[in-house]
Length: 59
Image 1: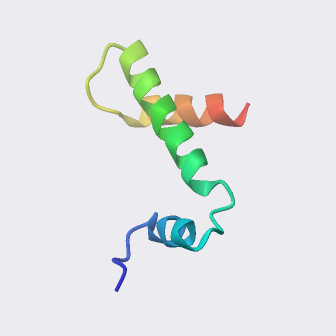
Image 2: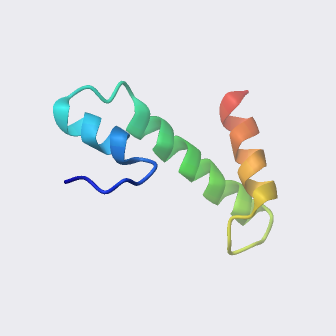
């Protein structure tokens, strides 16, 4: 049984070969979270860094 985590559907789809790029998109977004956090001189991702990362990825 697969745990009910937010990303569990994407992980499950990857095993079946139907991921449609979702794991890559999640990885790209997480990388931008870390870059924005580092650029702000912080050690934890906060809402401001997350919003900055989403803006960067979507633009």
